[in-house]
Amino acid sequence: MSGRDDRAGTVGAMSNTGDSIESRVAAVEKEYAARQSRLFLRFAMVEGALLLIAVLVVYVFEVVDPEIGVWILVAIAAVGGFALSALLVRHMQSRAKATARAKGENPLF
Image (cartoon, rainbow, N blue to C red):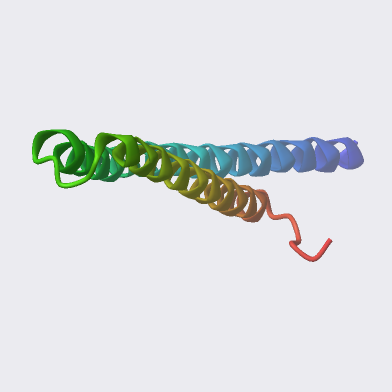
């Protein structure tokens, strides 16, 4: 009967460990969701400011011919898209590593 008690205690201990792992993973996911929101907000503000400046230079102050200005706007948008993609990939990789660490997984395997 003591064997049963030991197993019951072990199962309870595993359950508590599982709960703490789940709570660590949830905390990591919450932290990275907040980071991702801040990333999108910062990126949108910078990209928006760059596009606004370009529109002002091209169409309001007419420093650049509008035919060329359109290509400047497209270039800013394309570079911004590539930059956002790179930032998101890096963010996803770091989130996956942090989640694995929270679960206690060995990063070498």
